[in-house]
Image 1: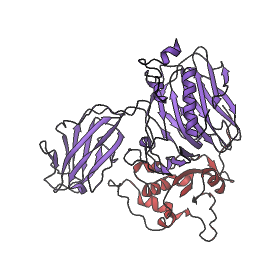
Image 2: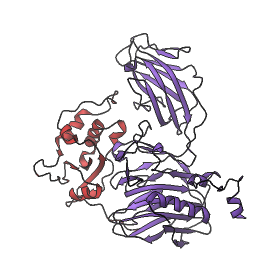
Image 3: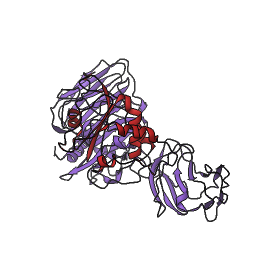
Image 4: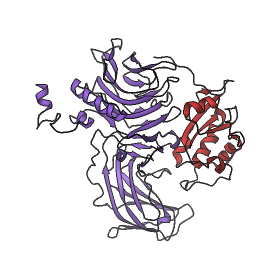
Length: 130
Length: 394
């Protein structure tokens, strides 16, 4: 299942530690980088979109376990836990996607990239031809 | 004369009875890359090249460049040298060259370790296929690396069977076996092979940024999500040429947001980029190149559209940038590039700028970037080759 995750610019470090916990290696600590997307209030967001397991939302509700690859203790458990605390998942009753909000991390499942960006209420700055 | 040479039975050109392959574009030594997502033997889910892509919707962390034929270099580990043993925290590593067994008979402190570094002459920056089997107390072998520092383990191995088979970029000249400290550790290298894998292979080490392999109706492509998917090659040497030929089979599902199919050196002088679309809301494809001033050659072809794009770039004295769709008449823009020059050496970004952003939303069925002018005959063959990849006949 495809997931698209919007991270407010103030939470990129925390979100990258969470991404590394559910990812495959230390490189996943760079999952969220530039934050060019904006919501209607002008807040800036970084996005990541990937195909993941269908039970990812429920797995994120359980306590984090250090991944097998992290034999050197690279990932900051506190930062990853802080990211979990501000995670907005789809409403299980209505399945409506959360909007990208300042100070929050929003997860949108099942939508392809452009549709997910729209559902999150985000837009990309318009660019002219060079 | 050209026709006679191309059909020669002994020359390097097209031979009678030989099916056309873009590989022929590179037989003369031209710089560049050829990517073919329909060839599953070139796709791996991880950037280390240890887990092959086998089915629809799997991520692609490594796509091998076929322009050098996928042949392997000479064996570098036939006779393993005596390793340099790096101890810490009281460990005392030892090596038996007869059985090729690495041991640590002395228990050190909690943070101790032995490292066994075999200098086999790897060249930093080159990608190697490393394969083999280790046996013994594998629970204490925590990494096989092609570098000597940092916690990243390059070569995944099966902790039960000890088998490893990866295609990894070296960061040092060694193979480094990294142990967690334990008096019980004893691991033997049953077999090992290390051979260079020539080419500018495209990889993405960050999981979420990997495009997905997709297939339907006998067609195969990489799907880029328009959000963060991007593959990067190592540096491709184009500084000896002012001319460049580019062929791409692409699907552009939307014209909403500007996307980069491929580029070298993001949006800078002596660089090139292929856009789909050329800007947000535009129905155009654009091929851009130049020296001090970048020039766009544009073709209008509104989304959704699946097509073969051919871009021709010349940033030399007779500057001209061209772009055609499905082998049609190219749109050509001349002049305006500043002083004549050559392209640069640098990484290619596939699915976005090398530096990120301007991510491509769409499908890539195949890609050829060739650092040379390509003859009309070879261009026609390559366009038809790409057309077959997108499911049309030209």
